[in-house]
Image (cartoon, one colour):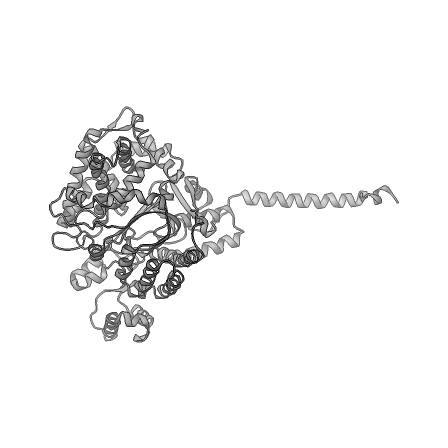
Length: 620
C-alpha cells in the first residue's frame, strides 16, 4: 500500500480539486461577510441602519428579574395569566396610538424575515420596542416616523384620524350634551357614518350579547342614529363608543383570563382574587369603580397588578382619553414598614397646603413598595411610581393606591444617567448631595402629593373637563411641588436628616433639567421646564455664565416652591382654562442662555438618552 493511500493523502489531481473547492467556499464566505457588513437598502419609508443606530447608540438596556422564590405555584400561575392579559394591553396600546402600528410592525417582521434579519431591520425592531410603535422621539426631541406610516396626530387613534380640536369643539358647541361621552376617559370617538354604526351594532349582536345587556342605552343610541342616517336626517358629526365595545374581542379575552386568574388564587389571596374578578367585569362594563374599590382597599399577600386604561398623557387633543397598560408587581416587604409613619401625617400635610378650600384626607391610603415582574403598554418603561385611579368620583370615596417601583428606582443604569445630566448642568459643590435616596423620597412624596390639594374646581367640575389638556400638566406640576414643599416640614419632624433633605432638594433640581425644548403635549417635560423658569425667576437657581452651570441657593428653596405651589393650586381650583393657558405659556420660555446651553452641556456629557426595559420572567 502506498503511503498516500495508507494515510489518506491526496494525489495531485485530487489536491487541485480540493483547493478549488476551498477557494470557492472562501470566496462565498467572504461574499456573505461583505453582504452582512454592507448597508442594506430598505424600502422607502424605513430608516436606514445609520440613522436608527444613532438612537440605539444612546440606548441602554435595563433587565428586571426580581426574586420570586417566595411565590407559590398558584401565584406564579396567576403571574403567567396576567402577562397574557398584558400582551393584549400591549397590542391595544400600540393600536390606540397609531392606526397603522400593528400593521406596520407585522410588515417590518415580514421584511426582516425576507432579508435574513440584517442589522438594518433588527435595529428598526429595536426602535419599535423602545418607542412602542412606529414613531420615534429623535435626538432633537421630535416625534417622527421610522417606518412608512403617517406622522403623529394629536388625537392618536382614539379620535377620528387627523381630526383637529376645532372640529370637535364646534361639534360640542352644537351638541353640549355629547361632551361627557365624547371626552369620557374610556371612549373612542368615531365619525357618524352608516359603516361605523353598522359595525358597532354588529358587535352588540342585536342586543343578544352580554355587551348589549351591559350597554342598553348605547344599543338604543346606535339604532336611533342609524335610522336617522338611513333616512338622510341631520345627525351629529361624531359619536362615542365605550372601549368595551370598540375593543370587544380583546376585552372579552382579557375578561376570561382574569376570571381564570381569580379562581386560581382565591384560596390563598382572597382580596387579590376579588380585585381580579371585579376588574374582569370592569373591562366589559367600561366602568372601573368596583375593581378600583377592591384594588385600593384590598389587603394583598404578595402580588399586585395595575390593569386597564388610566393615564391620558398620550391624548394630545384634549388630554381626556386613557390608554391601556398593565403592570405585574411583587411586594417588597423590607421597604414597606418605612412608609407607615408618613400615612399618619396626611391631614397635617393637607392643612399646610397654601390654598383656601382644604379638604379632609383619608388617613389609610394604600402605599407600598414593589418590584416589577413585567410591564406592558403605557406602563412599560422606567416609570418609578404610580398613583391611581384618577377619576375624582372614585378617589373621593375610596382614595388612591400608590405603587413605588423599587427595582426601577434603584436601577444603577437609571441613576447613572440622571447623575450624568445633573453633574453636567449643576456646579460641582452641589454634586455630592444628589443621591438615589433623594430620588426615592422625592418620588414617594410626589405620589403622595396627588392626594393633596383640590379634587374639583370651584364649579364642581373635574379638572379634565374644566382645564382639558392643561389638567395633566398642572396636576403633575402640583405633585412635584408638594414633594419639595413638604421637605421643610419633614426635616422639622425628624423624618429627614440634613443629608436626606439635601438629597430631596437636589433631586428636585435634577428633575427640572431639559435636554430639548418640550412641546406642550409632553406633560412631564413641560411642567419640569415651568419649574426651572420659575426657580430662576425667584432666585432659587442662578445661571453662572462663566462656568455654564447652575448655582442652587438653598435659602430661597422653600419660598420659591411655596409661591409656585400656591399659584398652581389656585389655578386648579379656579378651573379657568384661559388663565391656565397663560400661566403655562409664561413659564415655558426657552432661551439660548441658560436653556439651550445647559441642554448642549448635558447632551455632550450624556452616554445614554433612552432605555429599553426587558423582563426576565418573559424570557427576555
